[in-house]
Image 1 (cartoon, rainbow over the protein chains, first blue to last red):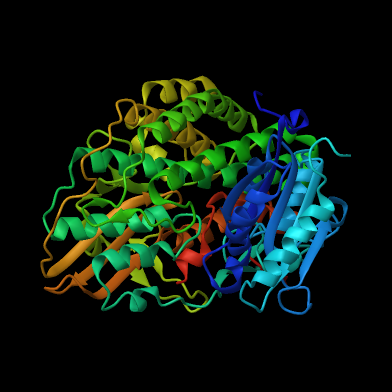
Image 2: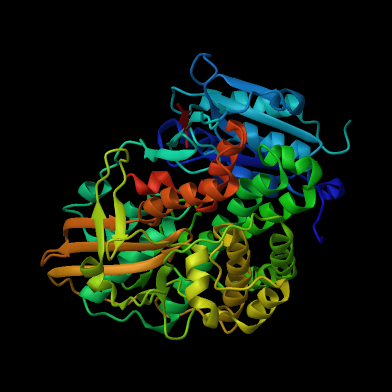
Length: 157
Length: 432
């Protein structure tokens, strides 16, 4: 079959994908994406691609295809204080317990599928925002700081 | 004296279906005594929510009924209003709505075949297990589903609950560049869609032929997707406004979704029924691929639903390529209209089957009453009948796990969307 497989990972840009839906706190991933699009423009040395995904299901894997580095932005309920940014690395993501029902194919289940299909970028993070708050400047700055911490600019290993 | 066991099978929550339902089955003395497809997802009252809203609002509201087939809801509603107001949005709108609809069939069918149904026929519990051994097939499913989603989003701004449709046309016409890129992607997907038909036909399907009525839309020239008469292989051929004279909805205590009967009997809507009555409307290249499989249609083997979906995937990719061939951006992608009071009827083919709408509209163009008959509710009677016949042919003496799995396979063939219908499966089985 004729697919562009991820092991090419030709695209050097970092893809940021806001995951969510137009409802309540589920928009946090999208809001953060919009804010980061402004903030990251001035951060030297990086190339970014910004994508919004509306309840993408398994299609999320296609959105990351071809990139070596990807960051998912999503609302999270981890019982932290509202607005806390929580970073999960690829290895940690694979361990999230999958829901028993597959009527909604959630991010965790899709990532497990992606791992099985070897379709996950070699560097993958989930930047989760604890729900229960509106997006503040503080949260955006915390997200930028986390991104700088986890992602070295291209050429810097 | 009898060695036959009495068994009760309960599947408390059905997996790999949309929404919440269960199956309850009692086998006594080797005979099925009780079989209920229990749909307990709470009623959603959408028909009441839309009252007092404008027709354009209703088009966006009904899209929220389903995350998988929102386009179908919008298309049935828009056409109902346009018929009542006696407006013709013109050929461009008609063609582009068909293209957008192709996107919905593509994503819905690709998801069902590869991630929901195929594990049943290849002996896996779910798609993640299947992906280890069939990675290319699962990747193909993802690629086709993504393409379908992007085709919807090209017209509706997003693939889930799109917002591009209005009475009289679209809010926005895609750019030449977007359409050109989309056409290249559709053409590149054709060989994959072609391979999918052969692959679907190669799966080991039970040989289980049953008598049932196939019903759905049939159009004088096109494969029944966007519009047509309500038609069946038992002789029905009516305008969608005459629906109530032939199809009756009935309430069954174990389901929050109304059942439906055609002339007093269960009937089938959806891909298999649709292909059965639309064979002569397939594009020649799709018909040739189906012919090559050696599987004869019309088919009365419900397990051929998966193949029917694969055939429909190829058909919609071909059709979308053709309809986008000479694409041009119109001056304005809608026509003006004036409301008229009266009763609006509309129907189109959702991926799972015929979706019928009836609205009463006042002089200001506000909806005062609504009725929506989705495909899964129409199929409930047929599903129960199918489970009984299919389990008998499978052998009621088989062990409980095998019976349960077989019943679930039968149900998943219908790709039931319980969320739409409730307006699905736990299996409870008892052998006493």
